Length: 380
Image 1 (tube, helix red, strand yellow):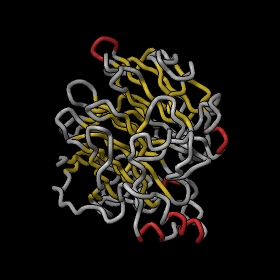
Image 2: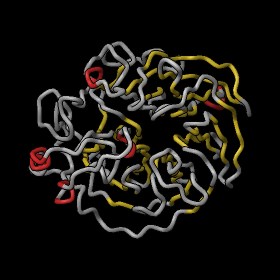
Image 3: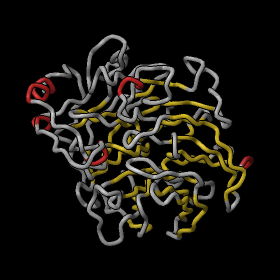
């Protein structure tokens, strides 16, 4: 199954050989053990011919983003309601906020049962594609004993709370947490392996997976194993997006050497912990694109204007990655490097702009005046 599309992975040039510095525990701020010299040497030759390079990115001069909202605390996810307002989660406060395109902020509610610690807390949010009829919104959060997905009815306030999936493994790190509806109308959720590597390859575990489900939390029709599991072999996915041809993509934190963007396909095994980056090994699907961990730590992912847009935490930049009709990735471009600090959520609004959130108050960044904020980017 590896390299089915002939895309391979994006190999890095000399920049890839720099060792990654250890920071706070967990991959979101670095915190990875620097690789031994032999691992760095192997990385230089891992990809082979035809790989899309991520180092030496193209130069772009985008327009400066517009600051929409300031004074937030670790905004983790953004999902749009019909009419243009967005729901925004705050990881540590457990607040669900409603933000208007004009920059007004209202508290939609505080999510019951959130136990925020480490990389856990109130994480993903998704709005039903049938919201006009059912008024459903969904949140993913870390509770006392697990990660779970809860459905609410939202009519200016939250009601009719229902836990639709529980028992997702939780940990101080690697909780996954992204929620998004696909073009097929089903709800997808990303989970992490909580630092327990083996669960990523265990198809009976919900950790280290991408899940696909109905609005009631049941396995969606067509799931490959008859369970919630759509794909497996993931370390920690925090970004999911679809292009206008229906290809699904996900960002993934690597350990020491490679962060990834993967083309997600039904039932595929993405290799962790057997493979980090490109493995060229039968049975494992190689990434479309890799970065060194100091360039990325990619979290949120969106699609707009023919490209994927990946928000980087440790890398403190917004990556633009063009993709073609077959799902192949072109040469990435780094935007706003270091200008706004750590970037986490990114979502495409109905007017085609991108809403991007900073994450400088998460204990791993250096808060600036007005942080955390939501920026509005006009893609080009």
